[in-house]
Length: 178
Image (cartoon, rainbow, N blue to C red; front, side):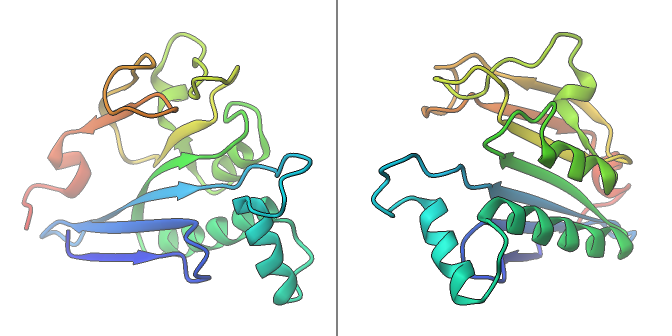
């Protein structure tokens, strides 16, 4: 890894690390959290509430999800124009097979890796959920050798299912690594 960064807003919505090959190829791996709507009676302490207060203070009329979607799509479009490939690992907090976020990523050319390579419908990715809300989106030129979603309780402990993806280094960063 030779470069990293975070969401410029200071809201902590995402962070990234860049990996570079000697041939000039670059891949940025991004971890992101897209806020879920605050439940009634949340007492203004949720991420949604915090982001809403921040957006209002900047005179932005968008809700936290709309602003997240707009900002990350703009960022990724800029990276794609610079020939930077992307691996996005995200808790999107909506059905990633049919929701707005999935459409937004598709429009800029990112592929839901697990949806692309799984023959079965994707399982719920939260232990109390009924639909897949976490995903890994990748640039179309990245070709996984394998990708999967572990059953709940396997891998790192938490309330989301663990996901994985693997690439050959030649596809990920070219012939030589530094």
